Amino acid sequence: MTVTPHDFLAVEFEGHRPRLKAVAYRMLGSLAEAEDAVQESWLRLARSDADEIDNLGGWLTTVVGRVCLDLLRTRKARHEEPMADRLPDPVVSLEDAADPEQQALLADSVGLALLVVMDSLSPAERLAFVLHDMFGLPFVQIGLIVNRTPVAAKKLASRARQRVRGAVPSADSDRADQRRVVDAFLAAARGGDFDGLLAILDPDVVLRADAGVLAGGLKAIRGAAAVAGQLGTFQRMATIAVTHPALVNGNAGLVNTIGDELFSVMSFTVADGRIAAIDILSDPGRLDGLDLADPTG
Image 1 (cartoon, rainbow, N blue to C red):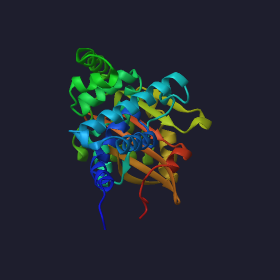
Image 2 (image 1 turned 180 degrees about the vertical axis):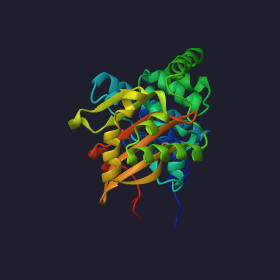
Image 3 (image 1 turned 60 degrees about the vertical axis):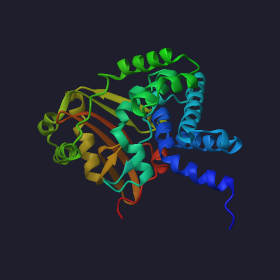
Image 4 (image 1 turned 135 degrees about the horizontal axis):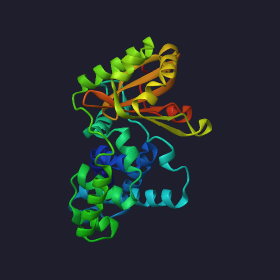
C-alpha cells in the first residue's frame, strides 16, 4: 500500500488534534463548535502547501485561533442564543476514565465557572488570554491573529486577566479534597440537612442552573443562605436520581441518571474547602449530545 503525502499529513494532523480542540474549546465553550473549528483547520491545511510550513503545530494553532475569533465575532454580531444565557458545554468523564482527548480538554482544570466569566470578554481579549495565559503563545504570534502589534496583544491579555482575576475563585487542586466536599454536599442533600449544607458553602457561592431555553434558560442564585434555601430541590434530585461521581472540566462533579437517561451534570468549584460555585446542566437536548460513557456500565 502506497502512503501518499496527504496520508502522512493527515497522520501528523491527528497528532495535533487534541491540543487544537483544547484551544478551540477554551475559546468557544462549545464542544460542537470546537470540533468544527478543528475540522476547518484541517481543510485549510489540506489546501495549503504543507512543505512551506516550518512549524506545523504553531501554524495550526494560528489557524484555529483565527477560526475561533471569527466564530466569536459572528456570535456577538448576530446575538443568536448568547452563551451568557447558557452554560458552556461540560467536559465529563467518570472519575479517571478520560481518554487522551478528554485529558487534553481537562488539563489545567478550566472549570465551567471560568468559562462563564470568559464569555464576558471581547473576542480579541478572550483569544489573547487563552492563547497566552493557557497555552503560552508569544504575543508576536497572537498579534498576527488579531491584526495588532505585540504590545497591543499584550494589553488585550492584561485586560482579560484583570477581569477574570477575582471573578472566579481558584479551585483547590487536590481532587480528593474536592471529592470530600462534594460527598458532604450529597450527604446533606439526601438527609435534608440545612445546617450541614450551609457549613460547606462559601458565603459568596453562586449556583447556576441551565435547564434549557424552554425552561427559561440560565438562572443564577447567589449567596450561601439563598443557595442553601434550594435544599428541597437538591433533596428531591438526590432522591429520584442515581448519582455517579465524575470529573467535570477537571473538577469533582456528579452525573445524575434516572433509569437509563442522563438527568443532569453538576460541576462544583471547591475553594478553601468550601463550595464557591455549583453549575448544573439539565437541558435534555444538550445532555443528549454529551460524549459520556454509560455511567451504569
